[in-house]
Image 1 (cartoon, one colour):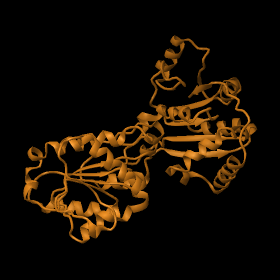
Image 2 (cartoon, rainbow, N blue to C red; image 1 turned 90 degrees about the horizontal axis):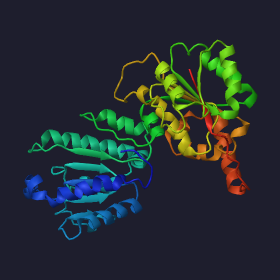
Image 3 (cartoon, one colour; image 1 turned 135 degrees about the horizontal axis):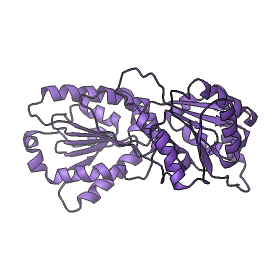
Image 4 (cartoon, rainbow, N blue to C red; image 1 turned 180 degrees about the horizontal axis):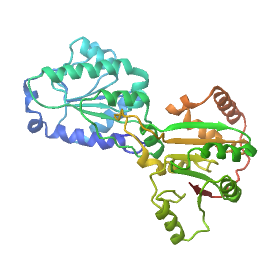
Length: 376
């Protein structure tokens, strides 16, 4: 499960895990003869996180009897003989396994509470834990399978690595369009230039690709006429959707091309583009992420190793007029794997923006016009 903070990821799995414990005798009868063998293990990245999960688990269980253990250092003081749900961090979990304080024989559910952070800080340990669980499944005496649950705010390359090591194809739930793009292996690029050079850049980007790719360009209304005229004069066929069009005219364009989103996404259902060009940045980060809906059908699973002739890509054109939007734009990028796509010049620029943000405050913000859209 991948979604932003405070979106219910923890409660989505924890309520189910607690209901399983209530039905323990029927579901996990094989554990009656096991000692020190938790049924559910929840791994968190830090102390604050695992204490929060522990409090929620006890709250959900209410008056039901439960053997839930929050294990902290020092491990030597912990009695692990009778535990059904173990909540801790990866280092403690590995220590317990090394000391034989617990075994994996009863493990049926392994949860990574904040998987992106866990894999970022403890990847070698997680790799070792997954290897041990794989060996355990081959040797244990009952046929109960192991369920792996991973929650994260961001899709990362390390999550992809874990995905590729699993024996079964998992169910992936992503509630953020940009994170879905990260999952779908699209190519991200950012280009910093003067606004006067953007039209020439557009001609170069589309000159050799517009005949065999579906492209979406999102710009502001003030830029629309000039951009449309430039592309047409360059011999590039375009269809333009702006707020001036009626619903019927918009639907006609969709039928003719079967592509192109609009900012509200209520009148057109477009998901098959292969190139998304951000000619201008929107006024909010939410609007930026929604733009990626136009690429949904072009995403490829990380498990798909076949070569693709067409690369799905997102290109952001940055100029001197983007300075109001850039702080939040780069603030998000620095928390995701998108930071690896930044060239050294842009990395230095993001640091200068962060410094300015800490030392100055904007007096007012001017809201931009709603974006218009050019479809190719």
